[in-house]
Image (cartoon, rainbow, N blue to C red; front, side):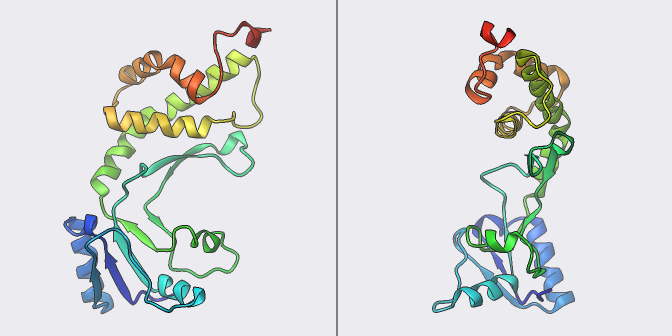
Length: 209
């Protein structure tokens, strides 16, 4: 496990209470005084570093930022898409301080090269509360696809994860926080969900044969 030597704070994270709390604790408890405040969202490695040096630098750095482009909660389809393991996954951070040689995250560091912790936790808490309505709606879509195709699925239906994430984003945007609102959303978006996202025409008689 690498010891954190520095903290980088992106512009979007600088005014959050959680950022102030983490930085204060890092200074007082762990004597981390190398705090870098950015005027953008893009940390950079020192010039001239090799890939191995960049990897070591990343493992010694914690980036405080906000979760922006995707929700904190996503639909997780397990490897192989087995039905038993579909669920909701909460993402609090990216990467970790450990350096396990067998970990797949080492490979993913080339696409997202920083250890990130997200500080906009108020939004995360709201998304968790809405998940109690999101996940049953995703399972409802799954059940309806099974009914349309007259088939019991051994694996998660194709496009269900992507459709689930789309549904979640709409629930967050529209603040769908009750079963009644969730049912109305499914009814109002019925054709869009199944035709455009699941790529199924529920009105096609061929599905019923």
